[in-house]
Length: 555
Image 1 (tube, rainbow, N blue to C red):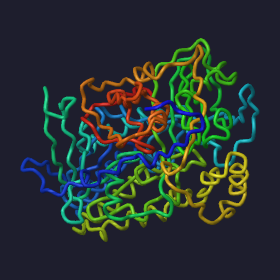
Image 2 (image 1 turned 180 degrees about the vertical axis):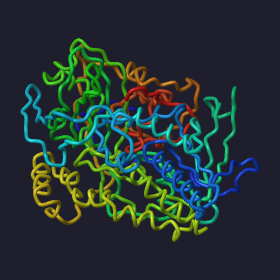
Image 3 (image 1 turned 30 degrees about the vertical axis):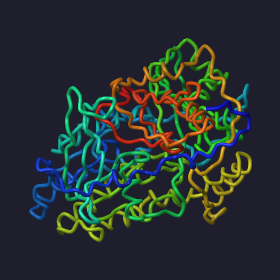
């Protein structure tokens, strides 16, 4: 790899390996020791667990009334070692889904923390913060601050109480297919050595068969994307993504409001902003989110967050405190026009972030994910009763989602994120116009390509130093990462990656997975926290053995 000239062009998409659809769609028959279930949810996040809970309730109520589907075995596979270990979010949660699912519970019984009281939005420059009116879509009165780890663990307990089998530590590595029908999943093996050969503690893959498979695998799910590509299911626009990096701080002084910012350090190079939420009087979650269509190939979201913490607005919140947890994840941002034309098929439904149910304008996704799981459960229950789990039998799920508040909200805000393709200033003007007109202006679809198709140029690196900063190595430690050092790489790098693209990977990854050593690109696979940022712009991410990755405790 040669030295890189400033301004050198970078074209991420030219060096990204193809999605390995043939590996992810398993066409051989299930093994003789396959585990049979009726319905399997792949991913124990809010969408999958809400769906499992709703389906278990419907089964119990129907059987009790004498008009049910009979015994239905429901399972939830989760790649993390424990529930909540991989779940990361802000989060200010719209409680609508909780109130609908658990109407008789008091607020104190729900896994939600304090209600949003005061809130503030600031436009930042490097040294100042100008308070501005909160856009209507970002107003949070009536919403609750929450830890998504706690939400997921609580939902898991409710699911188990209803007889749902939850299997943590079992990532799904492929979809079992019979013709055009999905009949279950194959899990990833455990105990492979660095060369991919069985080592100590080896456990072979397990086939889990199911009449219906629900992909609730979260943002940029490999199986979801493989299924959609295999079936030729498209969308008006491709999905686009942002990367969020988040820290949890124990602080000496309470934060009396939730804070959102826009502008510095992102203005002019990508869309995004930052936040600070008080989880408790002595605990603050803060983070920075940046779109992955940024122009400077050396932009480093982790480094920007370290720099941002030294802004006077954040410094006075954090000084004297201690960073106790760190995490990162990608977020689907395409909105309405990036929804797959259908999110169901023969023997399958796709829910939550895997389907793209996130509204960037309001910074919300949890209640959409949960409601999509509920809608899928209702369609699945009806299909089981009718003994028809074909694409036609499960079509009511997509139809219900498209009639629901999920699609209604995404349609109203359909161009607010896409408007910022015009830049921060022009995009802000367009987004304001969309807000005032309820999304009618600009009304037509703003077309966009994939993030990997956006060209970049080699610009200046981010200076992320200072007394409040933490290195990527220390950040990964704070994520609770417990991945084996000798695990085989789960990241497929393209052939003949040029120096400027390798340099982009180094800055892109918030966990220090990629390094340049002279003329070589080094891949430190055990560092990975499954944020999937490089899967958007470069090396492909694949499921690895169960229990790998972060172990978030309070995020």
